[in-house]
Figure 1: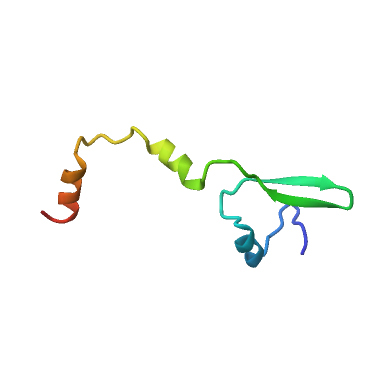
Figure 2: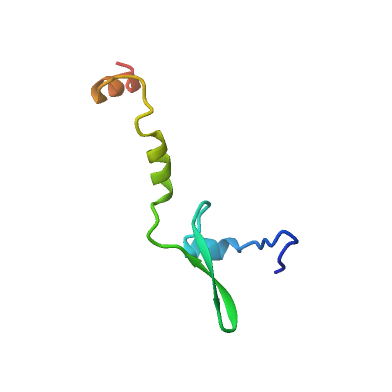
Length: 75
């Protein structure tokens, strides 16, 4: 595996999957004697949290849950 001229490297899919490295996952590089390690940053909000936070309070339609469910059920 080689590092590109932009400093990028592809992490093999099997390793990403086993390590839980999804798109948007925060990682950090740790320099230790004898090597550099990629470490998943723990304690951050889940990926969906940022989306929920961004959308919170953006709705403009004032409907109850029952009204929305009636629309989705075709009632």
